[in-house]
Length: 166
Length: 166
Image (cartoon, each protein chain N blue to C red):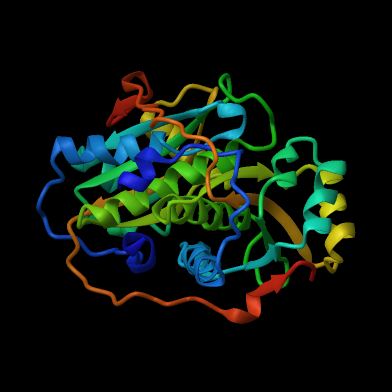
């Protein structure tokens, strides 16, 4: 609960690498997400190669933090695994959010960079990582040990809450 | 972290009502989700009226558990608040996933019922709750104290993990 409420987007990182077991925990959290008809349509590309990380901002304008981040995780959908056309982006978003909460719980920092459904960003990821046609890149999470501190945002807004009908 | 890994879809509930302060915590968790350009495009309809809950399964075939659930939360997008056409479903999915994790952390049980982008389900919710045109119903979360127990699913699958490229 605290990890949910305290989470903020972190875009500055120390150069401390993220250990393998922590990466494993983040992936375990991601794959614990619910999915429509339990389809679990996801794949994950763990990116730690400095050259690969540095190339992403060349085609994705909102990923400059990757020059500093020691790790990024690309969440993808396998179009052969999805059971409907409707819900797989929601499944991948739930997996992405689980990564963010797990990151916070582990004392790391992260930011969610949108990819799908922007064609030029999807094409860029596909070319760079050699993704096959049936794999749709969905979101990219930059991860590292935080080099900035942000207080909880407290975004609760009573005017957004309605009871029993609009 | 434990709440993420242990969470399962719960469709059987006791008749114990969910207290107001707990509902508040779930909404606080939802509104703590990240959103593209920090647009926070969401609204929430808290449904506890038995008559309203019982009407939803008449048009949404996967919501029979609402006959037993003391509470459902409809996550909506305000189309006037979104800053792009691309990312608002992902924002609403992140808010929905935060509700599910908070539910688990509070000892409750829940299940995510998809609504958007199925037109007939969206139309049904719109008519029932009197949603204005600019409000898009996105997902419905049934919530209650669990009357079934499920062990953690352990969905981790090493074959879904790739390193630095496909």
